[in-house]
Image (cartoon, rainbow over all chains, first blue to last red; front, side, top):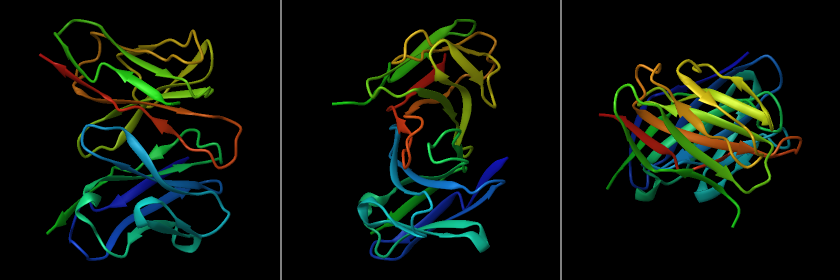
Length: 114
Length: 114
C-alpha cells in the first residue's frame, strides 16, 4: 500500500521568497515520486520526478526536490517565488518506474503575494 | 502534436441523466486512467485500463462505468446512480513498461448537475 501526505493545503509566500511545499510518503516498496502543477481549470503538468537515479531532482521552472529516504520525504522547493508560480501542486507516489497506479496527495495551493 | 484530449470542457447534467465524458490520446499509451477532483481532496481514482478490452475499478468506481474498445479511447459514463457527480474529471495516460515515464493528463472536464 502507498500513500502521500502534503502538509498544508494552502501556502502563501511573497514574491522573491523561498517556496517550500512538503510531501511525505508511505510505500511498501521503493517508491517513484512525482510533483505535478495544476493551473486553474487545467490538467496536471509534470514538474519533476524521482526514479532513484539521483536524490536531488531538478525540474522545470526552477523547482527542485530532494528525496530523503530516512525522512520518507520529497519536499518541493524553489529559491525565489514568481507570481506565475501561483497554482496547485500535487505530490504523487508510484510503486514502479512506469508511473502506474499513481497515488496523489491532497494538493497544496500556492499563493504568491506581490 | 501528440497529446491527450478531453471533451467537453464544461458539461451540465440534469439529475437522473447519464452523461459520457470523452478521453482520446494519440500517444500510443497502453494505460489510461480516470480521476475525480474535488476541492481539498486531491485526485481520486475512478477506473483504469492497462490494455484494450480490460479495465479495473479504482477507489471510487460506484456510479461510473467505462469502456476500452480502442487503445486511444477511454470514455467515462457518469450514471444516475452517482449521487454527487459535480466535480472536475481528469483523464490520464501512461506508456507502460518504460523507465522514467510519467502520466500525461488531459485538460479536464468540469461536470455540474443542474
